[in-house]
Length: 82
Length: 82
Image (cartoon, rainbow over all chains, first blue to last red; front, side, top):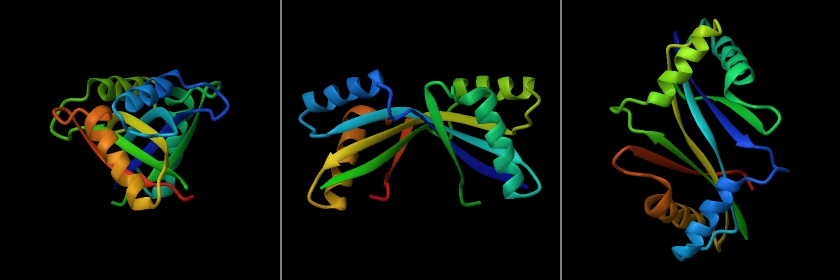
């Protein structure tokens, strides 16, 4: 069965996020009042696996090996409704 | 009160996603079997608003005016647990 797994990759909370700061000042210039912005990646994977747990394990391997840089980023994995 | 609102900005389903295709072939080269990949942005906003609905409205304005390009992308807004 095909599972849709989403991975959220965000900059670590303790690190500066220059892209987020740029968006923040852009929004303020547009008159939109926002306190803080952080920008990360959102990756949707379609994985053919026997179970949702298997699909999540494959997604976690993908995140660790390719998608997230643990020095600067953390990731969260979530299964989308089938 | 400060609300944490997350915005998911993804390439439209009908459009080619070259970044996703690159990740897909990268994962296959690593021996990780994945059917399809799409890569978008994940933006977390901290918004000071009177209610969650107000915060979401501000986030939607931000997405429409700056964060998402409606020609190529769609967005989804979700409130994180406080």
